[in-house]
Length: 123
Image 1: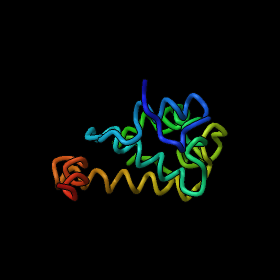
Image 2: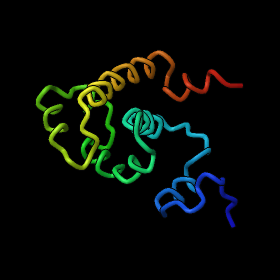
Image 3: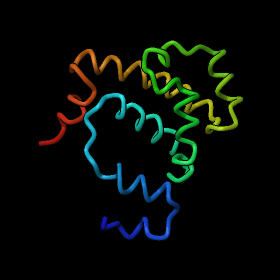
Image 4: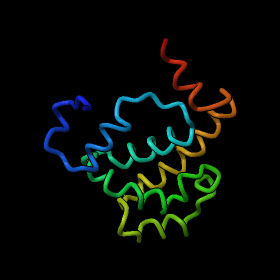
């Protein structure tokens, strides 16, 4: 039996799965780290359960969190995302995602991976 944190007790199944399978587990894959960066950015000001419920829709809307595609999003794509009722429609967060993708790519080039960069701050 999995020992769960008290903050997840009585929560929905999607939250339990997130706790049991993802929360607190170190991530080293750049694709997963970028996905979490995007989702965490959209979560600002909202509950995490809201993001978890929309996660699949975010993945579809943002081309499976493909950096190379997101870097090239233009105003037409931003408008398309703003019309997508299945995601959080916040222009600032959408534009931040595009900018974050560009910066993420620069960091990958400089450090070999985003994982190398971020884990470089730990022992």
